[in-house]
Length: 398
Image (cartoon, rainbow, N blue to C red; front, side, top):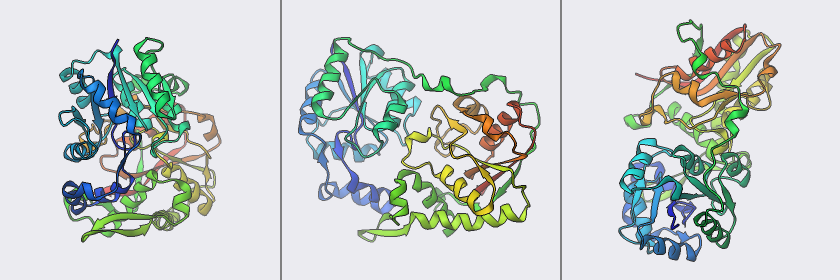
C-alpha cells in the first residue's frame, strides 16, 4: 500500500518561530506576505523535502495547516516544495468542513491516510476524520506528554523513526485506533433536560470589544494578552516574557504576559470579597475550545488558583471541567448552542466539590453565555444543590 501523507506545515516541516510576531497585526501579515524570504526559516530536516517530493509524484502528499493559504504557499515555495502541492488551510484545526472537503477532493481512502504533525491538535484533527497519525517531537508546539494525551498511533523523535513509522503503516503493521481517553470522564450529553431552568448570575469585569471590529480598547487588549498566555510556558510567563508584535517596520516588545494576569487578579479579587461569597465557595475554571493539553499553559486554572489564594476561597488543584473534543470557536463560525458543550465536555473527580456551598464558574470571555449555562446545567444534573454563579473577564458588546 502507498500511503497518502498529510503534513502539518509550521514546526513539522519548517521551523517558523521567527515568523509568529508578524501574525499579531495586519501590518505584520502584509509584511510577511511580501518579505518571507528575508525572515529566517529552515527545514526541520533536509530529508523531509525529499519525502514530500517523492510522495507528491504519486499525488500522495498534502499539506494541512491552520496558517493563511497565501503564507503557506509562499513558505513552501521558499523551501523548494512542489509548486502544485495541495494545500488545505483553515484558521483553526480541526475544521471539519475543510477536512471533509479535503477527503472528497483528494479522493482519500481513510485506511490509507496518515497525518504527520507536531501538535496535539494535529493529532485530534486526524481523529476527527478517523485517520491514523504520527506525532513528531521536533516542533515547539506540544510536549511529548501532551502528544500522548491526544493518542496518536506513533510518536517519533527523529526523521529515521518517521520513515519507519510510515513504512510500518504502509505494511499494515498498525492502523487507526479511536481515542480511549474520553471514556474516563463523566459525560451527560443527551441526558440533560434543557427545559429545566437554571439560575445563573454572571459577573463580568468589563466589556470586551473584539479586535475584528477595529476599535478594540485597552481593556479588550488586556483580555487578548491574557488569552495569549495559554500559548506560552508557565516559566516564560513568570520570567516576564513579553507579547511581540510587528509595527512600523519592525518587531517590537509589548507588555509582559504576567502583567495581564495580575491586572485581572486585582480586578477580580474585590468582587469576590465584596459579594461575601462563603469561605467554602469553590472556583471552577471552564475549558477553552480545545482540550487543555493543546495549550502550553492552562491559564484559566492558573488564574483561579491565584484568585483563590488572594480571597481565601476553595479551589481544586486540578481541573474538574474538561473539554474532551475540540469545538469551533463561535467567532469563527462555531455554534453558540449549549448542546455542543454537552457533547464535547466532561467531568473528572467531581467528588472534590463535595462540601462546597457555592460554585463560581470562571471563563475569560462570554457572548451568549451558552458555555456558562451548559456547565451550570451539567453540575445541577450531577447533583450539586448549592448556588452557582459565574465570573468572566469580559462580556462581548453587541
